[in-house]
Image 1 (cartoon, rainbow, N blue to C red):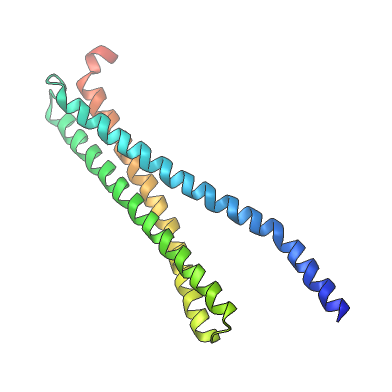
Image 2 (image 1 turned 180 degrees about the vertical axis):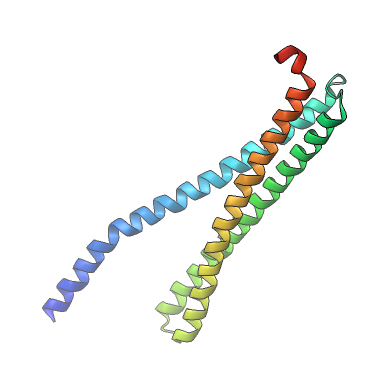
Length: 155
């Protein structure tokens, strides 16, 4: 009996660094998602502000890249909202798993919820990577558009 208590205490001590790093990872992911969301929104605002300038558009190519840049920023913002909602669903599922384990409900229900949580976790990362990709495409497109319009002043 004493040996089992010692083993359980040792397992708890070994799990503490993992739990701490898992929490740090979750916080950093939240920060990164929100940062890309803020940058996408600000970039979209900058692009819309450029529309107010009557001298901005001079060529068809600049308009093409500008339009796609705005579209990519909108997609990035939509993906950010989707990833946030997906993470909230994942957190709620994890909370439900914990509650059901405390109530000692059937393992099949808990395992089903664990599978759902794993799928949601994987989806979070996929959506996050797409969010970053569309933000980068938006920045690239907008930069090309600005360079095309102001190339005489830049070069």
